[in-house]
Length: 242
Image (cartoon, rainbow, N blue to C red; front, side, top):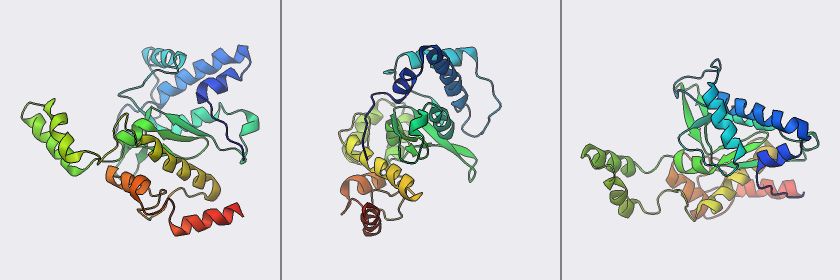
């Protein structure tokens, strides 16, 4: 099985199109991204028509692949379906796995509490893994929210950072965290197991396939566990290799 690393999934796929199709493809992407934006966390709405300014914003963002997207949440499955259409026909078979890293924040709708939740990853064709989602989606230690609320109530929101640092150092992944790359390896493993077995997750909290909902669970499973994969998944991997 070969490995190919592409600097930008979107740019590489668009550049493979004939010149006459490239502009149309970028325009379709801009409209698709605008439609995939979550407007209300408590409402799953497919009926809205994007505003011209929203589409123009996505055009500008697509024209600069290094542009950072902050403050917007997108529907993860809508993004997946949008990017799926970019995959070249010869790479759409089961012998290819596409893993897309993004700094975009995306989420999925949960019927249980009728709202969107931010996610680190969504697995399918292609797999999406968000570095911003790793920071924002898993909940931080409870003390983090208590201290942040305390300083804000005192009218000192800027003091929250200084107040949180000593007691919570190392207990959650932050932007530019040197541990981020190692943690991402575990999410790539989840993507691989999704395609190999249909199930990316493991109930063992020490296994890198554990579906963590708290930052401290992420750190334990991805960085501090006694093994990379639990005995069951390690055995399954060896069986698949044979």
